[in-house]
Image 1 (cartoon, chains in turn cyan, brown):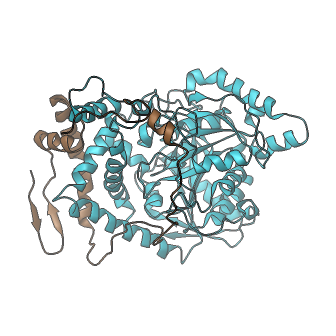
Image 2: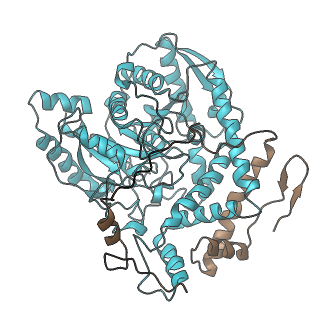
Length: 471
Length: 109
């Protein structure tokens, strides 16, 4: 097997056994990027090899989604607005990886300011799905997912606000983990929707994801929304024994909009889980159909606030030199620096927060949010975790949904409820439909990362999907 | 523009449509310059989205509390200890217009 397709665990053993040096591993990955990234466009910028620190990830090459700032690198958020922005410090999650010894391969492409489900809104071109170059890789962490799937990185970090780690992981056949909200510091993550944004790993095995999360998770005094709860050793939870684990199948996640091929693959996966001894039962989350509406009120509202800072004054793209007055600096900087989807969402948010509409939209959505979160809580009294498809469909063709914003939003239908409730969720590969990967989602209760990893790992080890790579 | 009616239980909107003028106003609030053409396109697209969002009115939220944040954390403090920022130079350098010690803006007054 090529070094660039090794998991973190395999690569580390190679380095420890003296079969591979960090430079050689990095060169293998860099060579792979040189070979195929012209087609895939997963990377926005590359980093050269730097002597890594000693730690559990010593010499392991990782890619970072370009919404996480890394000192001295250009960090664009996939936007023209930050085309020449050099980050002045490093995000906490990345700092922790650095201390653990990882080597940065580069920053990955993403939907602009993480707004999208296909990596088509990036100002730097779409990312292609390594399994089929005419299909999207999913989004918004499309670059990170494609890079991991294609061997262009041993692991990657992404961000998940409505499904942006899990859905591209599903579309590209890799593991994508969104931890409990507050589990990982958002310090250094360019904010999109502060009450949903979560940083998490994309990897080629559940074990790797557990290890990365263990390293990046934990209280951070620089992010007051991080949870004080100690971080358990997630890797130790991977016992492969799930006998007696109670798994809920939420019926609303298997309705009409789910493609047959996706449903079939997921139902087979559920049979596999039963064979492994899990106790499976149907449950109901009745307000699931309202999740997209809740999400697409709250997100634009918070995004309109978070993106107000891009005004051409302190950093980033600016029309200062040509604008006649201050208002023009603002209006033209933002007209020219932002893409259409970003502008659309900022305007929806501005509207929904404006006087006369705030109660009917934003407050209403936050109340329905409470109902959705409580529904999950109730269900988790009867079952230990939930299993469902990650996405209603497999990867779709480039351009298929880019003219229909609402159609694109519906891609998040099965992932955004998890962000709304602040819960942990993982996507693992569970087969194919039309030769494209299908993702199985495991959702846990708040701070239930261990049960999520345990169930996902047991399934993974009982199947072969995780050993497959695209050509 | 649709009319908001208080029915006692909640608010109901007739088919929510945003006119070009409303879009213009919102763009102004958001400090995003848009052309007339764009105003038309956004008006259509945003109206479709708002229409979809209107289904939230089907949900009875009487007596339901607002989730302002999902962590349940309260009053997360740190000591108010002033210290020099190591970022000052870099931050000033990042400004599109300025001399590294100050940031230039257009006339305000």
